[in-house]
Amino acid sequence: MNYSFHPAAEAELLESVAYYESKIPGLGSSLIEEFEALANLIDASPAGWQIAHEPNIRRAPLHRFPLSIVYRDTTTGFQVLAFAHDRRRPQYWLYRL
Image 1 (cartoon, rainbow, N blue to C red):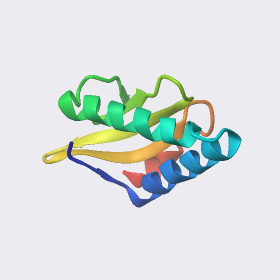
Image 2: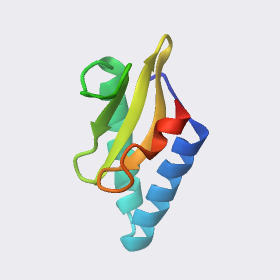
Image 3: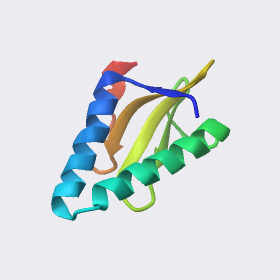
Image 4: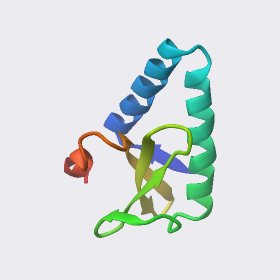
């Protein structure tokens, strides 16, 4: 799997893991597992999700959590631009482009 994080996206992932772990022990680990599984799917088929913003920014939702990986395809894999909540602050990550 070959991906990189925008620095703010990595912080969002870590904050989400800490939040869910504080609610129910082990839930943060479940979030990490689901993130990694989805990242593997994105790596295998980066064009497999709907475009969220032109030119080529895509959003892949997690199944158990109300969160999505917002990413763009790169020549060496993909870049995670945001780890965004599905119902809060839509497209706040646009300044990261």
